[in-house]
Amino acid sequence: MIASLAGAAFAAVAMIQVRRLVRTEPTTTIVVYFSICSSVIALLSLPFGWVWPTPWQATMLILAGIFAGWGNCS
Amino acid sequence: MLLTSVAALLQPKPIRRHECLAAPCARPEAMVGIGLKVISVTVFVGMQTSLKSLGTDIPAGQLVFFRSFFALLPVLAYLCWLGTLRTAFHTRDIGGHFVRGAVGVTSMGLGFYAIGRLPYPEWITISYASPLLTVVFAAIILRERVGRFRWTAVLVGLCGIVVVIAPISRSTSAHSRRRNGWA
Image 1: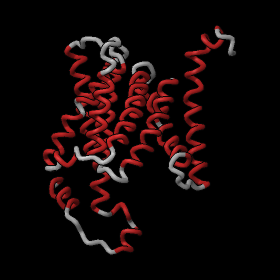
Image 2: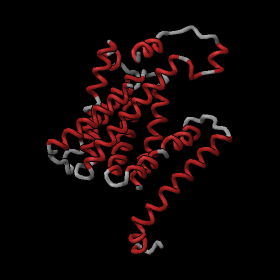
Image 3: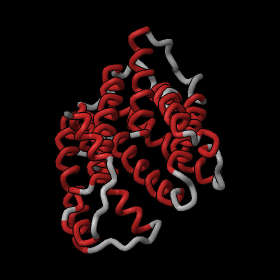
Image 4: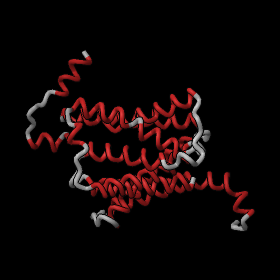
């Protein structure tokens, strides 16, 4: 619950940063760089308990990503 | 029938200024915008459902990676379709993007950690704190002016979130608080 609340607070800070960025950067650039940046940062957590997903889990993970990207486009 | 009405919506129609002010929702671009926003929200719920179905078996970092990496596929496909793939990588503020990335990844990691552990309605209600806190931070960090009514609305919203949080914290942590001598 604390994680969820802290997540919401960080999301709010992220929105402020996006608001600063849109003054000079197009939206698509923000989306592309965010996806690249967070992929790289999240990849750093690889040694900390990543698990080999079952085919079902892998499908859900990939679907989550595709849905998120699609949501950003629309 | 449906296609013709969608095509009619997409047709730009000259609008007189006073018409715009009187009925903003009747503008065709507004209808397309609303439609896209509804699709966006639906698809994001699809994403959250996928993540929720995984429970706590997969660490949050791995969830964030898959969510971000595979999100690039539709985004890049869309940019190809628009023909703006090359210009999308052009930036004047790489540091700003990095800050946004670091803050965003922290937020996403915490949110994904929580989604497997909280009931979905509670999780989504707590995430509603985000737009409210955005108003607070916009006032503090960006020095944007926030009126009295909006401050009241933010306060009411935050009270609502406290109402949701209070029963969970009682049921899940009363034991640990008692053990720690807080209650």
